[in-house]
Length: 316
Image 1 (cartoon, rainbow, N blue to C red):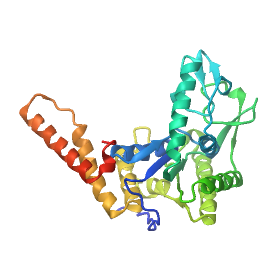
Image 2 (image 1 turned 180 degrees about the horizontal axis):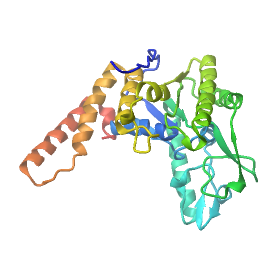
Image 3 (image 1 turned 180 degrees about the vertical axis):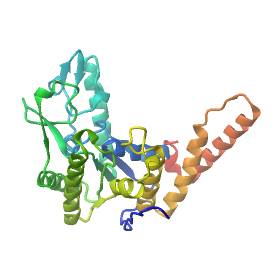
Image 4 (image 1 turned 120 degrees about the vertical axis):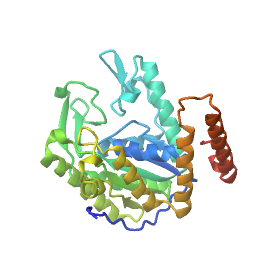
């Protein structure tokens, strides 16, 4: 076998379809969240959009705990677009009202979702941050403002650890049973160069290691190691040779499932994956007898699944 297998210890966390799962962070958090959503897990994926650095992710969770309501004082206009330094460009709008409405709708729904969340999946992408010179705060997105308005620097391990110790204490005081799974994004930030990318990723790994040692409800999933060491061949990369390919994402998703899902969850996941593929099928001849029979069969399996698992009723 021409492969270096990453061994993942058996996890104490067992995720089922009845659990609420929130994912926050980089594109990898988005990928795993979408995989869970595709098979009808109850998930909330990146309520602030894709976030890359630990400080922005921490600040976002703080806003959820505060149930913050954004006003016009919390956003800004640049080149006729209204935006938030706490959010990705998904929330940008041509009017302040539109921007605030998008932000508060997602923030409110995510704050409510967090109340029943069993597991938060947090994926760090980079240790590099941009601090706005005027306010001194770390921004989640520069929104193409001039580079002269920001200071770019790399976080230290201690900064990340100190921030997250406080955050985890807050979360566990409110949600005693909450489990937190950290990962480091396997997507390399190549514009910094190979060496700087490795220093950044190492900073994130060291910080997570410290947090995991101090809290039994903090865990680590080795997505970064799987991509770097187990999936070395370039067929596991997208065209830019930096992002994981769909094949790689599917493989890491399987390793994630094997690590955290019960055997019953894995079995149900397989059935729901097939159902989702069938329901998503786009036929060449939608009026054909064959397709009508195919669709009838898929609908019957959907009804069987929702009868067997009533909690799926509002998800499929």
